[in-house]
Length: 121
Image (cartoon, rainbow, N blue to C red):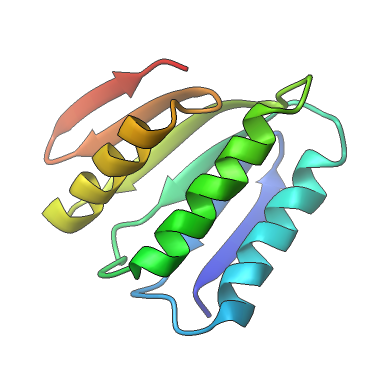
């Protein structure tokens, strides 16, 4: 499976990504689960482990940007912080691209190569 959500430490939600995304169903599962969490209308944080992630097609990158734009238009943002654990140049560059197109919904902490970068919304 492409993504796994764990809510045992709610409001801190662990999101673990696999190597890559293969199908629209995998992408839709990710967005559907995120939407369910957001629709609870309670504040939450994402702890994202993307250290296994190797590739994401541009198709899904653009869909994610579109989803972020929709969320930014919401009057209330329930996502408070995102902590991203990454270890590849590919994922780092992908994140840089996404955040150039749209600012984050919340404060983002990127943990990469023993560095911590913070991007404010």
